[in-house]
Figure 1 (tube, rainbow over the protein chains, first blue to last red):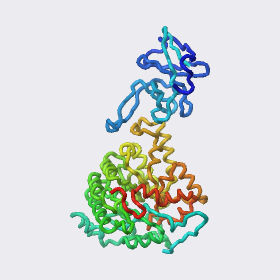
Figure 2 (cartoon, rainbow over the protein chains, first blue to last red; figure 1 turned 90 degrees about the horizontal axis):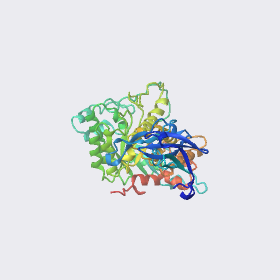
Figure 3 (cartoon, chains in turn red, green; figure 1 turned 90 degrees about the vertical axis):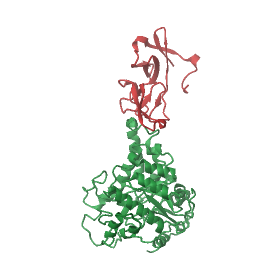
Figure 4 (cartoon, each protein chain N blue to C red; figure 1 turned 135 degrees about the vertical axis):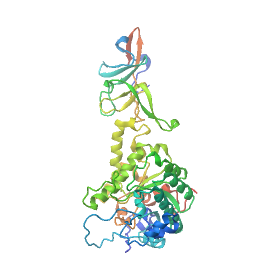
Length: 129
Length: 378
C-alpha cells in the first residue's frame, strides 16, 4: 500500500464506467476529481495508473496501445527476449516504459508508479481512492 | 630533468611525502628489441626493419602512419622523449616523485591498425615476453600490463592467463587506436572473460592515428591540434558507449575497467548523454539493469591529460559530478610530449584525504597491490 492510500475501510469508490466501456486489451483515461487515471484491461484484469509520466509529466496513459518489450536475463545468457506482451505502456512523449500491472518503470529500478485499485462490481468499473 | 619540489603549505601534504602511483608511463619498444622474442616468420620481418631510421612512433611495418601532416617549425619542446631501460625509467620517475609506475608501450599503441592478424598476435606475444623479461620488476616498482591483441582475442586470452600470476603484471592493456570493431563487440568476450577470471583490470588507451574507422577518420583536421583532441577523447568515449551497448559491465560484473589518457571532464558529459538516451531507448540495451551512469561510476579514470582551467577548483567540481573521488587515479603519461607533472594534480584543491586517494590509494585498490607494488591477489 503506498503512503497516500487510505485504509481499505475508509476509501471511496468512484464509478468510472460500465465494464463494456473497457474491452480487453484496451485502456482509457478517466478523470476522478483532479486526477487523471489510465484504466487498463489486460486479459480481463483491471489496473489503474496515473496519467502522468515521472520523466517530464507526459500523458503516460494516452499512448496508443500497450505492448511488450525487450528484456535480457542472465539465465538466458543476456540474449534479448520479447516479454510482458500487452503489459507495457510507453509514454507517448519520450518512450519511458512502465509495466502496467506493477507500475514498475523498466529503465529505472527505483521508480514505481502508484497503482490504483480498480474493481468490477455489478457491471460497473470502480476506482478506490 | 630538473626536480620540481613543492613547499609545505599548511596541512597540505607535500608531493614528495605522498604515495604516488602512476597508472600510465611508456616504455620504448623497437623492432630490434622485440625481434628475439618474436616467433618466426615474423621475427624475420622485425629484423628487417630493426635499423630503419626512427622518427617518432612511425616505423613501416611496425607502427605505421603517424608522420606529422602539418608544417613543422623548430621548437625546444622535447616532443620525442623515449625511455629505453627500466633504470632510466626508475630514475626519471623518481624525479617526478612517482613511487610505482604502470607500463604501456610506445609503438604498439597502434597495434590495432596492423592488417595481418597473425603478425599482430605475434607482436603482442613478443612485447609481453619482452616486457616481462626486461621491464616488469616489483623491486623497481615498475609493473606491466599484458597487451591484448584485438586481432586475435583467443590468443590474447591465452596471453592474459599465461602471465596472470606474475608478480610484475597488474593489468591488461586494450589498444584503442584504429580499432574496429570497438571494444564491447562480442568477438572480444574471451579477453574480458580472461581478465575477470584472472582478477586483472583492463586499461583502455588510445593514441592519434588517421585511419578509416570510427572515430579515427580524422583527415578533416588541418593540424594535430584537432586530431590529438579527437583521437584520444572520442576513441575512449566511443569504446565506453559500445561497451555499455553490449552490457560489458553487466556480463562481466567483477571486471575493473580503466580509461586512460582522456582526462576526466568528459565523464559527466558522456554519463549524462547516455542516461538521457537510455531513458528513451532502454529496449535497445535491455541488458542494462541500471542507467548507464550507474556503471560508469564503477569505472576508473586516469587523470592525464588533467584539465587545467584557470580556476583549478573546477576540477574538483568535475570529480564530484561523477562521484569520482574513489575512481580517479593519477597518471603522468611520462615521457610523452603531453605528460603531466604530478605537481599540477597536486595543485588541485582536493581535500587531503581525496588527494591521497587520487595519487595512490585508489590505484592500490584498483590494481590490488600494496604501497611497495606487491600484488595482493596472488
